[in-house]
Figure 1: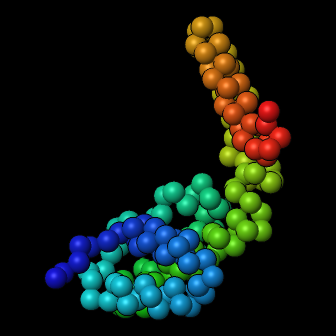
Figure 2: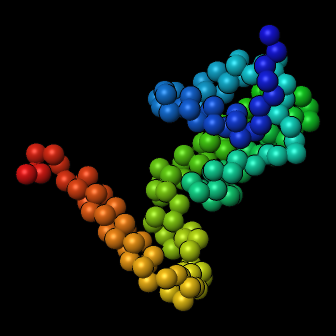
Figure 3: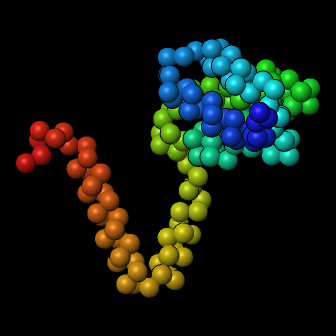
Length: 158
């Protein structure tokens, strides 16, 4: 039975899921498992090598590290090279998160709201009706309270 053609992002998500299921698995073993899974399947298309959701997890230079290997693997019809590139990108992304936390959480250099925060606040203040602003503020306060409650250990909650 022929497998359906997967995109690079689909294969990346599969690699990510497999590594989450078995976090102690080495990247070498993950590569071997994925090569076995995809061997004989149609190679992913080259027109879309991006992994969009990774942009929110790590800087582009980390999550895109293996994409040149993926492209070369597709061009040479070599699943081992495709998987090698995907796992390299996964390793870089997970390494970034392990060392620094989620992107934008620990340093201002990666904060994507820098430079637009003031304009956004000005635009919201100027164009959003007062009633809607009040609803948003109440909703944000409720979410903040729920998050604070979630951090309190259960035995401390009355």
